[in-house]
Length: 207
Ligand code: SF4
Ligand code: SF4
Image 1 (cartoon, helix red, strand yellow):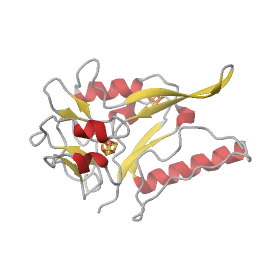
Image 2 (cartoon, protein in one colour; image 1 turned 90 degrees about the vertical axis):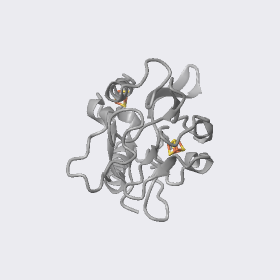
Image 3 (tube, helix red, strand yellow; image 1 turned 90 degrees about the horizontal axis):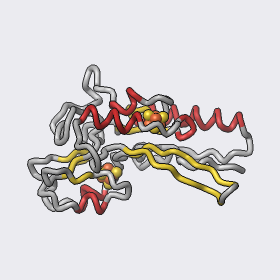
Image 4 (tube, protein in one colour; image 1 turned 45 degrees about the horizontal axis):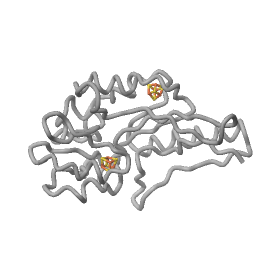
């Protein structure tokens, strides 16, 4: 397989402004309301009044071993050999919603036209676009995902997973310098050096 592409999200830089989610909607022209390829959620830890809230920007993770691919009865979902991006071919999709139920992140969204749609890592613009697009690894100037482009806190990054690992390691080292008792959470890699797309835990750990 060509090098896996994915996202890296740093919760420490996210201010919860939703610019990423809105940029995604604008670029792909997704329906107002319930169809969100990217969303920002707040995770709470601790108990009131001693608690902490963390913003998490979520989209399809382009999983290493995607359950959505396994459950699709028409093989409409593909994990691309060329760059690891998971795409939906809407000519094959029958709108059964199995992928939406199988996905642990609720990434595939059911649109008004009765078909599923989700993040294609901005291979192309619009629902259903990108399945046949050239590999991100060979494109001369791959389209920067809209969420990354518009992220106010520079919390989101996209690229080949090797580059994202370097970013995650640098962020972990900075965190350790600030608080040497912190537990550093390293990205999880698969057998071929690939990783799930979001490579840093959203929950800050204290030692
Ligand atoms: S739709 Fe869900 S299961 Fe499928 S690749 Fe994306 S995050 Fe993974
Ligand atoms: S644009 Fe960036 S800072 Fe704003 S919510 Fe999205 S990830 Fe967080």
